[in-house]
Image 1 (cartoon, rainbow, N blue to C red):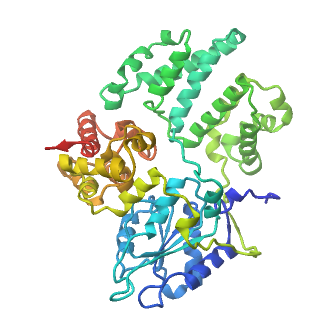
Image 2 (cartoon, rainbow, N blue to C red; image 1 turned 90 degrees about the horizontal axis):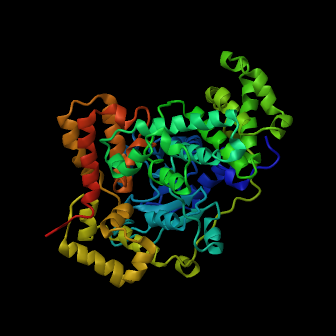
Image 3 (cartoon, one colour; image 1 turned 90 degrees about the vertical axis):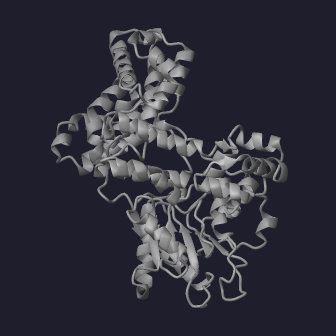
Length: 541
């Protein structure tokens, strides 16, 4: 156990029984009850990760065995029955009454009976925080009996999120995710560019540069020309499919490759840990070339090597690499390292990385007494926190007006009429702010796509879109699973931004889109996915 644990790591891999028990007790004692006054009302607990969520559920079931494991349930996207649990949670008469969620219930879900929100995770995105709070803002007449409407809801904040946003008015918004495959492609391109310098003119460096070119060109050649996203970038794909194009890259070449092709390529390698190690080592090479510190990256490598030496040295695959592993663990090795040494480490150790895990002992469970469990008690929420900027007003309006005819159509994959469009235009650029406000916050995003992004797509609408594809095709189990995964994604996100997303996580496992379907099925599937997005921007007379 380390001497000190950084605060952000609490509830990520360290779970303290006493803390969880106190939070559950606080909720069950002080949370808003249902109409009977005896049972806790519908509640969402926002957990840090799946393991944390399951631990909360397990502790609840131990503390309250009388509920027979049905009152409190984990709801995460990877669970087979997640959608069924959400349907049950939406029914005020059915269990579960507590849903422990990891991202899945943060936005989009409309359960008017929710009266308690428990923040058992750190949130740093201001927009997401406001959307999470929005889960409790739904009006519900007669919730507590005839004439006794829902007038408020409780927020239990144990991670001082409100204090954070008081001090950091704008929060920290997440950047766009880049897949590991795209990151590796970009790093290889940067290395190729770096190694044009005369400092790397020696044969061994040029061999490395040529091997990187072979990898990059091989990935470009493997792109399927019929893919819609590939066709959109055809100019760049055609230009860089020949090795001669890499003879002497310009800054523009480097930029074009990274910005236009990195997101298209894929790696035909099912060993995720090896691929992650590639990404780590290429990052280390670039850090050294850019005269940046490699200490953090080095420590990551050494920790993996230590696991192999201390815990896995009896494995035949590890035995043969013990001399190198011992060498890598010594500080003297790193004092003389350059990119050739890093490449040697990458190639010789990458296939061992799947063993460099602690076999289920990654998480630490403790039972230490809490000196003082603190939660933020919210009073006069609006007066204390200035969330009402334009972007948040728009998000809040969409969340609270899902029965608006235009928003209803977009949630159900129905194209807008001219009147619907003008209504949204009036709301977004007249009532909630100005046209300049909209352009400043949302740039050129069409109204329909913005609404979809916030209000999501109804599951029945998403299912209907793909029903003919499922019914008309003779699909195997893996293909059906892939289609259902896309349906889940569209339901939660409103649409698929780019067809390239179908080649990235979570859609690339266990088999990729390209390998699962033949060319005709791919084209039909792409047309369906594009139609869902197009329906959000199409205006019918």
